[in-house]
Amino acid sequence: MKSDYYDLDTILNNLSHQLLPPPSTHNAPAVNISLGPPRNSESCTPTYWPGQKITGQVKIKCANKSSNITVHHLRIALFGNVQVYGKRPGQPINNGLFDYQRNEQLINTGLRIVKKRFPLHQEEEHEKEDNESTEVLSDETRWKLHCKRDEINTVDSGLATITRVKNKKSPEDRHMEGLIRRVAALDYRKSKNSGVFTADPVYNCCQHDDQGKDAFELNANTSTTHAISFSIRIPTSRRLSGTFEHPHYPISYKVVVVMKCKDDDNNEFICYSTIKVRLEPFVDIHAPIYQSSIQSKPTRQYVTSRHPILNGVLSILSSPSGWLNKSSPSQQTQQNKLTTSYTSGCASFIQGRIELPKQTFNRDQFIPLKLNLENSNISHFNIFSIQICVTLARRINMICSMNEEVEYLKIQSSTVLFKSSEEEKKEEDVNFFKYSSMKFDLSNLIQIPKDSTCTIFTEATKESFTLNYDLEVQLQVTGAIRQQQQLEDIPYESLDPIPKESHSYIATDRHRVNQQEEELSLILPKDPHQHKLKTYTLQLDPLTVIIGTSGYSQT
Image (cartoon, rainbow, N blue to C red; front, top):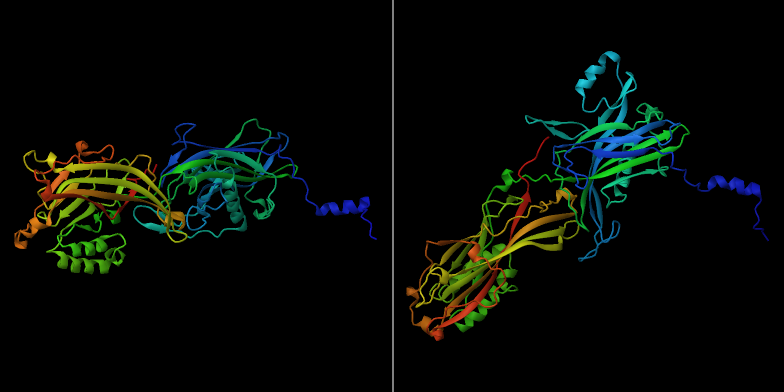
């Protein structure tokens, strides 16, 4: 029988294969990042535009005054990512047909602080050429710290587009980018965070430092904090989405600092500091591709016919699950022509569509929406009132799967009511709209909120999701249908055709409906047996609008 007893030599020999406790971090230097303008206050997240520079300082303070710090790699980067998760990152969300979980990097670009030697006679010349990135720290006149920036794919100089070839990334560079991603994920809800790793379990600090040629030393004897200034330009060569604060689909950006260093006792540390920034999106509403006018497809609703058999056919055709609505757009066009020609003498219809002069709008701007309504046969159906409900809705669709809509939110809604009785004051007669074609100017109904999130395109989220805005319009048309006996006494040739001229109406405050009216106060005709009142509801095809920005500041 084998004994479970081990002597002291066996225990000591096995210690080298066991995990050692992490070293203490009380001697690790403290790293803190701070940003300059356009930060307004301590409680406000700094906001930047594409093309602007993020300027700030990295402050490093040595904890042990008897031990200097050798910095082997100091990187400052703008990091952004888009995520999809449930209650917390890493947990899938299942509010649709599928479970969704994504974490895609949008940007990870910045600079590395390295040591650069200058001859004495060239020192002032280099300061003038690169005054933005040099003269950070100096050791008398022998060397200075220099910002080694990441290469950008394209640079638009205004006259021509210059293409640069990216430098091949070393294993050290790729490892640092991985550290940036790891640091950015720590305490993701905090606007500012700092800390230290005692050791990197995957990578050694000085393994790929090219024998320390870019390393520099920070003197611990000084009582002051070492301050390193930097600036990172937000690129305009790529379409970046703006910051989107959402509990399940956030898009966030941070400025991250990671420093790999050693002290005189050969203790390795990875120090970091992060600060959240807010980015405005790269969506130019003045782009030529967005300046064309758009309009929806006409939505048609048939009015009750004087032929009972045709009433049943029309109700099937115009229902949401009807033959016309299930057909393809080309088939619907041909079927509409055939149905219109067959029913032109038997039934009338009302038809509506909406239009916009352009597709893009700025925040805090009114949307100049117009609505066209046609009544094909005034002699058959006389319109008394028209209620129009306009809604600006926001939709989030998951592109990474089957374009499933996972969120619908009403941003703003407004309802107006037009009555013919307000247009013509004749109490002795029935007041109906006298025009077959009517145009409604709804430009004062919907104003885009100032804090609206700009439209998020597929490319801006690495095909994770899209955020779009739709204008939805619902019509409630109330009118009087003449009785069958009265219509049969009128020859078809004498029925009013659709006139070429139209009448325009402008929605004002007096037309607004604060709360939906249960019943309209109708002025009934003297002989109610000759008229039958009916309300038809039309849900018009929505129009997609793009919410963007009017320009960018390059300072």
